Length: 325
Length: 260
Ligand SMILES: Cc1cc2nc3c(=O)[nH]c(=O)nc-3n(C[C@H](O)[C@H](O)[C@H](O)COP(=O)(O)OP(=O)(O)OC[C@H]3O[C@@H](n4cnc5c(N)ncnc54)[C@H](O)[C@@H]3O)c2cc1C
Ligand SMILES: Nc1ncnc2c1ncn2[C@@H]1O[C@H](COP(=O)(O)O)[C@@H](O)[C@H]1O
Image (tube, rainbow over all chains, first blue to last red; front, top):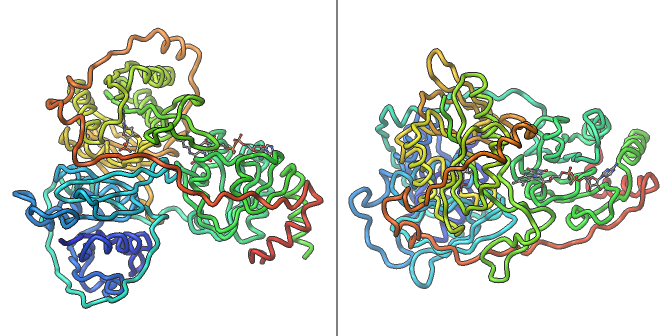
């Protein structure tokens, strides 16, 4: 039975998070991608490479979550009259990436068709007794939940950081279907007016180097050396929640469960203890170097390298050494 | 403006998460409980809207009697009344949670329901959206800036996605889920804390909020258990102490390929 996968596009290509969702979807059955774009704008070759056999190109004028969910609901076989009876694991499914949009649209879909929605799955496979065995993230990925989803249509999103994006072994041809969506004014009440966001230097989420500062920095002024080091290394400053709660730095710089997830080559964590909610945001860093006065801080169990000491002494000396090179 | 804010009691976890022996829940013997930062911001946003436009803030939670602790915390931040939808403490599905909370909202005739974007424990990302369908009201999620124009009775809600700013305009009544960063929550005041301590909290049994008791258990989604993911436990290579470690640090940064 078909697995419908909402695909988000970014600069003309399939967004990375959607490639991961397509990879998870492929394990459940033949994949039909659903994209809210004109057929001419679809990266068909890339979709084919990820094993997509059909693409539904839905006419859409911008992002409208409820309208998008209705458009997907209308593609689900049998809905709203009767879902097809299917043997275990052969029922239709709808997947999306576990992005803000993916989770939002699938939650709308769950409410519309009256079925459960499992957010941020890292694995899904047919269960022996019927339905799907799922592994789902909790606590922003710090815990995993094993669950069984046994619904006429499985609705799930794929965690953006845990499923690898892997192209299909044997890609086939792709059929493109243009879909007109009929939208009611109520659906369009929730439509985003889009504008470029205020420019704010290199983005935290994509920076190659992040210089992190926590309570140990001590004050708003204490961030001057971190800023200087970040600009020397071509990176940006990221902070812990204590720093934003104190008002030393804006929340846009917060790394963690309720902040931004970062994936730099280097995360230099200065005066940050390494609470799990902070780790939820920086676990994707390739390398972590910690500077902390406390050799037993939890960050030490996450870092590759550590300097035990006062960041107010180590950072100026490091900046001086880098300038002298 | 009458505002309802939904908050959830969750364990306070710090350096690591430990599970109960049966792997069904987070071990809370050594920890306290709290609400999510998103929800703390939802309470703060509600209190600010009422300070500006008049009205009152009600906080509601669905959970065990012990969740009165979280309701009293919200009262100390400026909410005026609190409702506990009482359960035996077992985890209920987002569907039932939304149904129960929506029944409280429609009974109260609220203009605005505020929630967190996602609960910090289960992270289901859906209770607010499901509530909006029970209430037949518009919903926007993940909001980082909220304005209300009294003249037109319209809400303007903003958030960012992939470097694009998204603005939604919607009439009241509406459901809005917010994210941390929308404001900087205040600390409880002393008079606020005293008032919260004395406040009478309304209790409603969960079964009186949903029409079919069998909904309490969902045969369609069953949690088997929880586990801590196998983390690549490592222990840092200590490069040295204080300023003396700087030459080693520079060498390592060079090795990692991040030096200009
Ligand atoms: C649901 C929930 C979500 C959360 N989300 C986030 C989130 O997104 N991001 C986040 O960061 N937190 C989050 N938190 C908060 C988190 O639990 C911690 O409280 C926070 O991360 C601690 O910040 P910190 O490491 O800066 O402070 P602390 O834990 O106080 O650590 C300070 C560290 O600095 C060291 N230090 C002190 N002085 C110096 C010095 N002079 N030189 C070097 N080192 C020094 C200390 O040894 C200590 O290790 C969340 C909490 C909850 C409950
Ligand atoms: N048991 C509950 N009681 C009150 N509010 C809740 C409860 N569960 C979830 N919520 C609200 O719904 C939001 C989203 O939760 P969820 O969809 O479970 O991730 C939370 O941030 C809370 O504001």
